[in-house]
Amino acid sequence: MSEPTRQRTLWQRGIAAPVRAFLRTESASAGVLGAAIVVALLWSNLDTGSYETLWRTELSVRLGGFEVAADLREWVNSGLMTLFFLVVGLEARREFDLGDFRDRRRFLLPFTAGLVGLVLPALIYTVVNLGGPGAHGWGVAMSSDTALALGLLTLLGRGVPDRVRVFLLTVFVVDDLVSLLVIAIAYSSQIRVLPLIMAVVVFAVLVVLRVVGVRSGVVLAVLGFVSWLALLESGVDPVVVGLGVGLATSAYTPARDDLERATGLFRLFREQPTAELAREATVGLNRSLSPNSRLQNMFHPWTSYVIVPLFGLANAGVAIDGGFLARAYTSPVTLGIVLGYVVGKPVAVFGSTWLITRLSRGRIRPPVGWLAVAGSGTIAGIGFTVSLLIATLAFDGPELDQAKVGVLTAVLLSAAVTWAVYRTTRFMSPKKKALALLGTSEQLIDLVDEVDPERDHIRGPANASVTVVEYGDFQCPYCGLAEPVVRDLLTDTDLRYVWRHLPLTDVHPQAQIAAEAAEAAAAQGAFWPMHDLLMQRQENLRIVELLSYAEELGLDRERFHDDLKRHQFEARIAQDVQSADLSGVSGTPTFFINGQRHYGSFDIDTLSAAVKTARARAVIDRHRKPVVGPT
Image 1 (cartoon, rainbow, N blue to C red):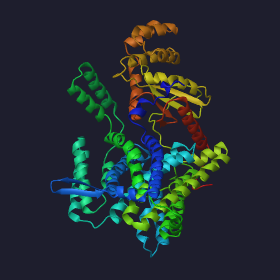
Image 2: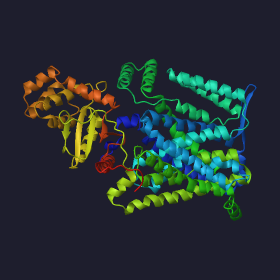
Image 3: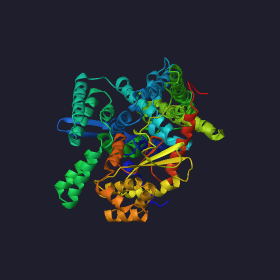
Image 4: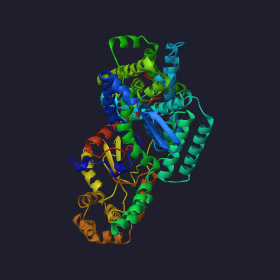
């Protein structure tokens, strides 16, 4: 496959898949975080003095008589980490607006798994430390680390479907939300009421401005900063501001009208490249995207590749020697954290999921198989970011070092158990492996209009287990790049391919008439021959050329020409466009595989993998039985 063919779809590059883009960034950044942890451990053991001296250096910001002063570690923990929790809030809101939580009933299971996954480890820690000086550190054993866990899952569970990672992410979202509330309520210092009220009022104003459509980034950033300062002054950890702003920021797919308006503004700038038109074009492009998407694009790479690793560097350092380890591994603090994560998390995630499935008699099921649920529970035992954040609030001195050892030990043990869980799939038949990883729950369907054999243009057997629907544009160069990939897919004798029109007339002026030409050829029984010619000759789609193609295919030229002049099939194409709008499609090519939108690249390897997963899922669906627990 040539390199251009491996490009992502326009949709993928402009509005990355609601969850999968998040997963890619989180997984890739785990290596950077891991390196930061190693550097912190080496630094703190080779030169403990310089490590602590640097992070305890005070940095103050003064404006007139107002001053904010803190050491570098606190600026990272309470300042920069606010942006990390902003991204967490953005992802949670995006899941509700665009992800599986669109069906609110699906929130019950990950919410319960996430909540029990917080409570049970905290209870285990409390029992181990009952009556001891470390009892107040129960919050350290609660939260999973999204970036590190997803990154290690990529390494330990090769071949694990995206659906498993999506399920895990939804559990982590609940985990992070509740953990932030715990920080705000249980681990804040003495709370001062007046600054707290001020912070709430300012934040309420910010939310109202968001709701009424105010888009000024400067105004919203100033209000967010004022709310952060007020919370800092109140004694409540101000990182909750980031979470609140993220949850208040809506996510939506771009409307085709907004995209066409942005195209028009860009064309005006192209004709008259003035500063004013450049500003209007930039504003138009930005407004076509949701605020959630813009903020994710702005902050997510920074939080994943800079802020969280910096947090790890500032907090993971602990001086280790044989005597210290002996004391740590007999300390209730360390043991409580290790048992909470390595035992409590898997039991909580798997047990609560099984219980809800059982009590609902299978009406509510995990979106993945039971082995994947077990693996999600074990990998959830990897805590770091929020755990260390709470540890720095709850402990100091030797207890803080013991907590760090507990967290890092739990990472290693949970990773090993997760590897063992997913390793068992190597000994399963393909059918059992698919069932163990994918499960039997019904999936949300993104394609609104089902395939209609009487109306749609179809290639492949009618009874195929996999149906690929493409919304395409005959003048779109990316559709041209995808065409040989589709041809490769069609060598699969158990695949049905459907073409639907989505002419992007604002950028491809000849796309509409080309689509009408394809329908005019279809009226004479030659849709696919005309389709293939148009895809091969995308740069030659004028009327005279279309007429020559009709002659080349042996069609009735006069009838073909008459159909084009009278726009005989304009309404037929408009129906395809309407179905694209209903399914949230605004770019080409866009693929749906068995009714679910494909957000990945359209190279042959990626599409083939998606088809393989869809076929495994189809086999499971054909043999679905009422399932109320693992068998």
